[in-house]
Each structure stands twice: as C-alpha cells, then as structure tokens.
Image (cartoon, rainbow, N blue to C red; front, side):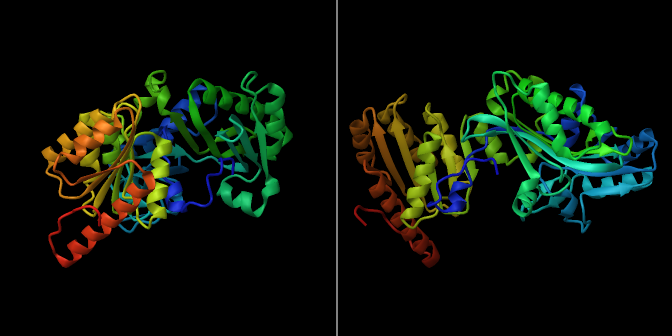
Length: 433
C-alpha cells in the first residue's frame, strides 16, 4: 500500500525481483530487540530441539503456551510441513506437548504462500507465554519511496492480513508521515494511538509504545518495523504479540549486534555466496543468464530481453567495480542453473574500463570452458578496444554496441541452443543468425 509503484507496462514477474537490501530477523530475535526498547512482549525463549523445548516450557511454568516455528516467512500459522503437520503456530498446555511439536518442526521444511514449493527449513521454535487480548491492532513504520520519508501505518484491525484490510475496509487504515527533523512527537504518537481502538486506560501506554517503536526504527537503521498484532490485554497492558523487523544492509557496520543475528540457513545459498563478492544475485525462471553492472541497467536488461521474446534466468548486478574474479564468480552463479542457454553481458564502463571487462570475460570463458554463447554489449570507456579484444578471441562471444540488437541476438541464440538440446544436436555459432 505504501510502496512506490513501478512501471506498469513491463511484465510483473520481472519487476518483482528488485533486490531487497535488508536483513530479516527471527521473531525471537525481534522480541529481544523490542525488550531493549521497553516494548512489551510475551515471556518466552527459543528452543532448538524437542528436548530443549520441553525444558523451556518447564521454566515458563504455565499451562497456556504457544509454540511458534521460526522460519523467515509470513503465514506460518496456516503453513504445513513435509511431515504432514499442519500449522506452524500451536497452542500447548504442557512441556510434553511443546516437545512433541518442536520435534515435528525443528529441522523440517514449512510451506506457506510465501515460500511456494521450495519451503523454508525451521531453525528453531519460539515458546512464549500465551497472553489474552481484548483488542488487536496493527502498527508499522516503513519507508515511502515516493514521498522519500518514513510513514506510520496504523489500524484497529490487527491480527490479520493488512493487505486484505486495505482492500476490504480501506477506511480502517490510517497513515502518518514522519518528519525526519523532529521524528515522532508525543502529540503525533497520541494521535496514532487513538487509531488502535483501545480503551482509555491503554491509550497512554499505547502512545509511549509508538514513541519507543520509532526510537527503535531510527536508532537501529530499520527499513521496516511491523507489529501485528499490537494488542491491548485484558489487564489493559499493551503488548507486541508478533513482530517483523528488517534492517538496511548498508548499516551493518553500525549495527554489529543485530547483524550477528543473521541466520544464513534461511537465505538462498547462492545469494549468500554472491554477497561475499558484492554481487546482487536472484534466480528467475527463464533461460537467458544476465550479468550487468548497476541495478537500473539490470532492470532495463531484463525488460528488453522480455520485450524481444526471451526469459531472463536471473538478476545479477555486479556493481561498479567488476573485476575478472567477480566476473568468474558471476558466471559460476549463472551456470548453477543447467537450463541456461545463453548469457547476456551488459556493462557500462565508467569506473572500470570496457577493455578490462572484456579481458576478464575472455579469461573466464577460457578457464571455465563455456559451451553456451555469450552476447556482450559494452559501452563506455575504451569500448572500441573491448570489441576488438572480443572479436579476436575466437570464443563464442558476440560483441554489440546497440542494446536492442544485442538483446535480439541473445534471444535468437538461446532459441537455437534450446532447439539443439531438444534435438540432441551440436551447433556452432556464426554471425549473423
């Protein structure tokens, strides 16, 4: 709802893969951080096995507990496991039940609407004291890219899909722009608190909670703070019953504690490997590999491939400082998908000269003994020298200066290779096709 719109003419499946530069935390880690800012959360601890879950439940000493699967995906409550267990959030009344559900969750994949068929392996369970709410609200702080400032979104209809609330009852959604010079003021916090629908007894604590959540967002370089639900309990206390926090990757040097909580098992291993080389890599479902420098140029490259009838196999932004080593790593990542039938290299040489990119590209193709054709469109510093290097290399690298011609060629090459593979034929590549 608050996200800036992207161009509508381009295929949505391409436009949805803009790399998101943020860290997500497990719920139990988010709860730890909320507690540091005096924000009420249910008493609880994580457990990493059934046996440990039983011990945690015994320590909490309650007949009203909740066992929550810890995986970085939404919709866990309605998810299901490969074992057949349905639901990643379970109410339990004994340590034995906590152990039983933890054994069925930890180390197993959960499948939700967000994970699709891939699923997410559950790293732990979070066992918390069950609290009883009289009212459930929704609260979040996020960036509005169009307005270029943070916004508060609040609603009295918490505990449910906020997108559904926005669609069915848009009047229930309230938004507040945050002035970066003043931040959230006590007056604004009090105004937000009135949107929750709480009793008069809870409004003062609700307003203070809003202030504390803004402090967390501001001090911890968050890109999103989402509490759903933010509840008023039967005794009028205000408590964050569930939380989603994300953090700007560029602030990792300032937020060492938070980034030490990163769970790499929840991330795509190839994307993790790519990040070690300062590469932004996301797999898609096509067959044309892409290597581009700059996120904007990368998006344009995906678009023009689609417009020429092809399907990109990945988004890969190598940034402005591409080297022979990073190009080699990029090709390795691209070729982890055996269905790739051609590769499109689209580089604008500014900081790095085109001839240096071409030399790295040639060295990589020779070292890796590449069998798929490569189309290279290099523009910028020393691009004539780069074209000469490529044309004299004797490799299956076809050099272009025009973007549309290059995209058309890589799509044609991809189609030829696909047909050859289906017919089990060997093909050679000569220009023009």
